Length: 229
Image 1 (cartoon, rainbow, N blue to C red):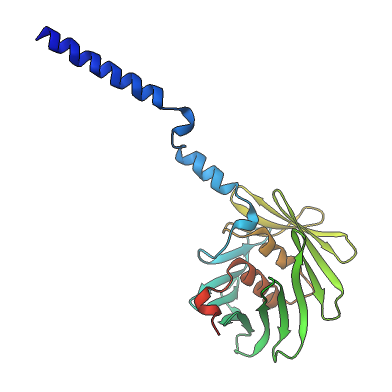
Image 2: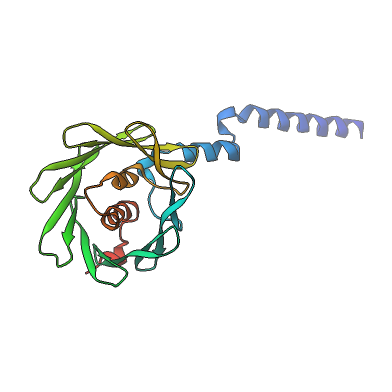
């Protein structure tokens, strides 16, 4: 019996030693807090889709407007829940309508990734948002450069056609904020939002419903089912 006890004890020690030798610090699953921190540090441009109501507040913490996703698009409301615009997918095009359902314009995607903003009758291209290296450029109907968007480690920088800074997007501590050239917060949201999408809010040459249409199209492009003609 004593011999059997010694044998079992030796086997237990060997098993424990082998497990310890096979276990490496890098093999252990990182703590949940570490995984959450890594997710939060992902590039802002990689964040896609809408997880729910996209609410924007000003620097005084007052709600200014919100984008509410729907099955076939979204709805834009002000801080008092009054409807400002409606967005509805028409294939790969996003129709922008007023509260009276009159078309204000369309945002149309292309195979190359550019977005064109067209008038309510789709007769004219008013603006074009296209790739410019790692960033984006917004041109008017004559091809004049209005804005450039350049990615940064913590967000994005928006410049006017002359190259002067007009705004910046900052992604920090679970908040995405749009700030003016002096660093003052203009708008902020705690929802997940890509910096390049948030940058569209700085395009003051466009009315708010069209700015939000570009943001929506970049943040939550149509699914393959909706994109079918």
